[in-house]
Amino acid sequence: METEILFVCIILIASILQTSTGFGFSIMATPFLLLLFQPHEAIQINIILSLIISISLIWKIRTDIDLKLLKRFIFGSIVGVPFGILIFITININTFKLGISMLLLILTLLLLCNFTIKSTPFRDYIVGGFSGLLTTSIGMPGPPLLLYFTGTNTEKEKLRATTLAFYLFIYFVSLITQILFTGTNTLIWQSSLSAVPIVFVGLFIGQVIFRWLNQRIFRIFTYILLCFTALYLLIDALGSL
Image (tube, rainbow, N blue to C red; front, side, top):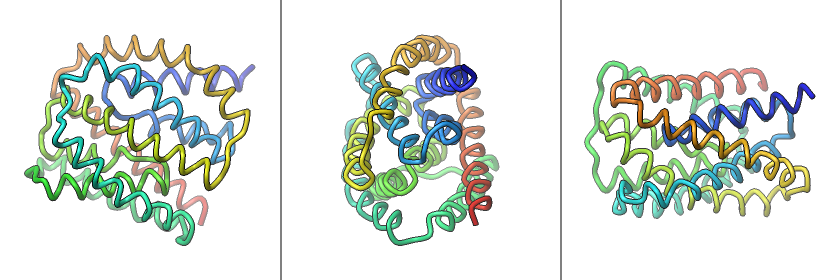
C-alpha cells in the first residue's frame, strides 16, 4: 500500500509540474521511480507517460508552437541521438552524469547572474543535438532546452508548447531505442496504464497553475528545476562511483 501511495504521489506531482511548466516530469519522476523500479523500467514508464501528456496537450496549445525552432531542434536531435546511445554503451555513465551536473550548476549560476544568450539557427541545432544526446544516454531531454529558453528570455507559452511538441518526437525515438537495446516487460505497461488517470488529474491541476503563473514566477520555477536536476545527477553519480 505504501508503494502504491508513493507511486501515485510521484506521478501526480510530476504531471502537474510538466503541464504547468512544459518541463519537469522526467526530472521529478525518474529519481523517485528508481526507488520502486529497475532503471530501464523507470525510464520507460517516464517516457510513456511523458508522451501521453504531450499528446493530450499538444492540440490545445498548438498555436503557441514555434515551428521553425521545433524543426531545428528535431534535426539537431537526430544527430545527437546516436551519440547518446554510444555514450550509454561505451562510456562510464556515472562519470558522464557528474560532468553534466557540474555544467548545469555553472550555467544555472550564470543565468541567476542575468546572463543572456541570443537565439540563432546554429545554436538551435546545437541545443537540439544535446537534448537528443541526453535523452538516449540518461533519459533527460529537458535541461538543454530549459537552459536555452531561459537564457533567451522566451515567453512561457512558447516555451511550454515548443518543448511539449519536441517531446512528442524525441520521447518516441527514445522509447523505440530503449525497447531495442534493453527490452520491455509487462510491469512497465501495466504501471503506465494504471498511472493514466493520475496523469489526467495532474493535467487539470497543472493547467490551472499555468494560467496563474506570471513570467517572473515561471523563471523562478525554471531555476529550481535546473538546480534540482544538477544536484540529483551529482548525488547519483557520486553515490555510484
